[in-house]
Image (spheres, protein in one colour):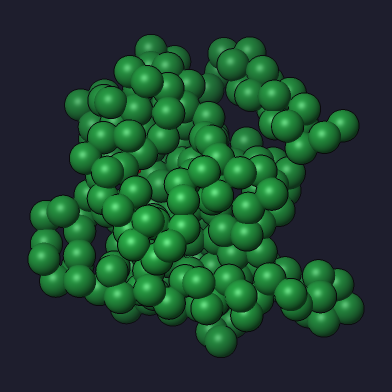
Length: 203
Ligand code: URA
């Protein structure tokens, strides 16, 4: 099966899983280049995302687009999704059990797309990869987990509320092309040794 076919199969399984929370909202699966070098992962869809069934298409999404284009990339070149794939009511933060329930599906989505670099947007998504990470301390740093490089970034919605966060996020974005170039050509096996999923290695 191609990546596209595997992703459609995954999407259909999520749609059929009636035990998942937030059933009253639409499924926002994710979109972009399935052969991307970098995948951005937010926390959960908002109102506009729920309406259009597309990730990051509201105000935070517009900032994400500007940041991506600001480093010479196009939105279509990257893959964008969320950890929780349906909108929590009133845009509240996703609950720990909601995150837990959607996690296996995110895991599969990452396996299918298999990007070398992942940029979690905000603390919820960062904590999926780095459970003891702190977004204020770790944003913009590069962590290696198994064969992936994780670059936690401030959530664009937080950057819209804080000029200093926005500046830090812009700075971190400027480093992304070099991070991707450096890590995309590294071998996927034989180099990383025994991986401890709990181990976070700061590069
Ligand atoms: N915030 C997110 O975390 N994800 C979206 O898709 C939109 C806003």
